[in-house]
Picture 1 (cartoon, helix red, strand yellow):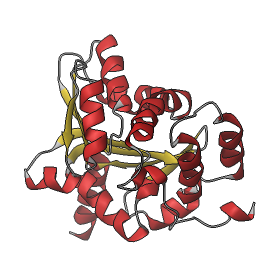
Picture 2 (tube, rainbow, N blue to C red; picture 1 turned 180 degrees about the vertical axis):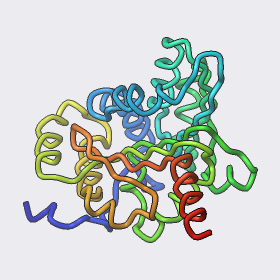
Picture 3 (tube, helix red, strand yellow; picture 1 turned 30 degrees about the horizontal axis):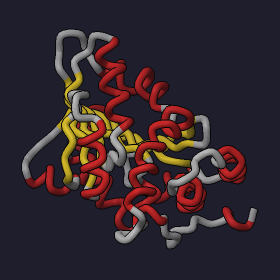
Length: 243
C-alpha cells in the first residue's frame, strides 16, 4: 500500500490539537481502555518482561511516561497486586487534559498521576526500577526520539520498555475494519494516523541509540527495550578488555 510505504512523520492526530472537542477527547481517553486491552499486549509484556523483575516482599517502582487516559498503569498495578507483588506506580503525561482525566477516572487505584515530563522528573532527581511507555514513540519527531530515550534511560536504574505500533498494511487494514464501533471519539481517525506515523521494526532499530533493542511482538507491535544492568556489564567487560 503506497500510503504506508514511508513513515508519515508529519501527519497530525486530531486529539493532539489544543482546540479539539473536549467531549470527544474525554471519550477517546475512555475508549483507549478497550483498545489497549484488546490489542496493546501489555498482559504478555507484564508476564514476560515485568513480572520476572519483581520479587515477593520487595516493593519496586515503575514510571509510565505519556500515560494518556491512565488505563495501562492501572492494569499493571492490578496484575502485580493479584500476584502478591509490591509495585508502586507513577504515571505522567505533559498534556493537562490527559492528566486530569486519568487522575479523576482512576482516583482510588493507588497509581500516582502527575502532569509532568520525563525531563522534569529528571531535574527532581527521581529514578525508578522500571520505566515504560505505551504508544508514545510514534508521536515524537524523529529528532526528538534520542532525547526522549535518553531521558527515559536516565530515570531508570533497571529496565526501560517502550511499546508502540508497528506500521504495516495488515495493521492498517484490520484497524480500519474493526474500529467502526468507536464512535463519538477520535479513536478511528487518529488510530489510522498513528499507524501511518509508526515505525517498522527495521526503521526503529536504525534510529535507536546503541544498547537499545527492538523486538517484534504480535499483534503489529514493536518493543524498544533497554536493560541497564546488562548494558553496565557490557561496558565493564569492554573497559576490562581495554585494560
